[in-house]
Length: 190
Image (cartoon, rainbow, N blue to C red; front, side, top):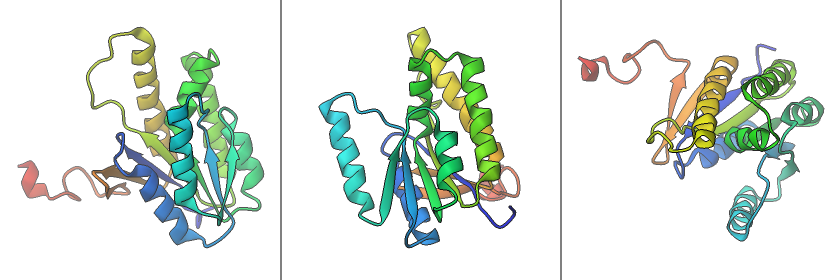
């Protein structure tokens, strides 16, 4: 559907990306908002993070926890929701890796997610970490994770209508754009 906007919000750790995504969703709908949580709490610190996110959202959000089959949740929930916020793709990739998915298995899951976006009858906002700005990890699993996150982010950036990156809590829209440098001041690139 051409009047439905799907959005990818990227950023580093503590960049404000989840807050940007929530504010964007809140501006789209006052009710019938679904928060699709991909996190599997494994320790007290992670449980505390989840609690903070829940408290920040408030009672006008319905939370659905789904660590793997997010495409099925989007397919099912979009008929009742006015907006779905998926937080986050990075944890989803971790979950897929821990379920022994290789690159082909993860990309097959990405295909299913992309199809769910195309069929969705409501806007979907995806949150993901930009993990490629750091040092090269020392172990192969961490490198595999970093590489998969980059590939998934590229695919999702192509699949959505709008891409926003949050840096230091400041959202910057990078898609749609009018070309390299034009949106950010071409004088600065010369």
